[in-house]
Image (cartoon, one colour):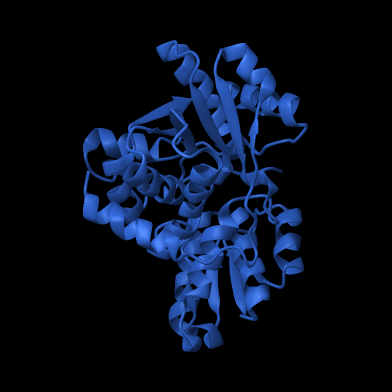
Length: 312
C-alpha cells in the first residue's frame, strides 16, 4: 500500500468541511440481519442525510474549498440523481450559483428537487454522457467550475468523513466494511482513512454484476470502459471507474463482490424489515454484498458494517 498517498488523504479528510450541511449519521444494528447471519450487522445510515444520500459530503467540501473568484462565477455539474441535489444544496448554503445538467429522461421528482434546492436544472440529451459533455462545455464557455461526482480529491475527502465517523462510533471494532461502488469516490475516501489507521479492517467493494467498473479494472490492472451497464442500480451505473479513485482503490480495497439484481432486491427488503426505510438499489448494494460475503466465507461472530448510501 502507498502509505504517502493514504496519509495525504487522511490529512485532507481531517480538514474536510461537511457539517455545515451534512449530519453525522447513525451506525445502527440491523437486529434481524444480525440474528439471521450470526454476526453483528451495522448499517451506516447515509440515507438519513438532508438529501437522503452521502453525496452532499463531497459536493459541499469541493465547493467550500473553491477560491472566491471561482465561487463568484458559479459551478456546474452533470447528474441525474443524488450528486445533483448535493451540489444544489451546497450552492444554496454558500450563496453560489449552481447549474445542474440533467438528461431529459431524469424523473421529474429529481428535477424538482434540484430546483427546490435553488439549482438551475438544465435538461440536455438522453444519457448521462450527453449531459456530462454539455456540462463541460458550459464550464469552458462561461468560466464555471465543474464539480465532478467522484473523480476529484476534494470530493473523495468529503466522502471520507464517513470513515472518521465510523472510527468515532466503533474505534477499530470492525472486521469488514462493505461499500457500494460506482465511480469510486465513496470507497476511495473511506478506505484511504480506514486502512491508514486500522489496516486490519477489510474493505469490501460491492458492485452489480452488470456494472463491475472496479472489479474489471482490478482484474486487468488498469481502468477499462465497459460497453454497457445495467440501469437497475442507476446510482452506480458508471462505465468507467475514476482515474484518481482507481489509484486509491487499487491500494486499499481488499475484495470486490458482484451481486445480481435479485440479490439487490432482497437486500432492499431486508433493510426495510429492519429499518422501515426503503433504500434505492444502489443504497442496498452494501447489504447484498455483506450477505454474499457471509455465505461465501462462513464468517460468524464478526462485526460487519454496510454503508447504506441512499434512499428513495
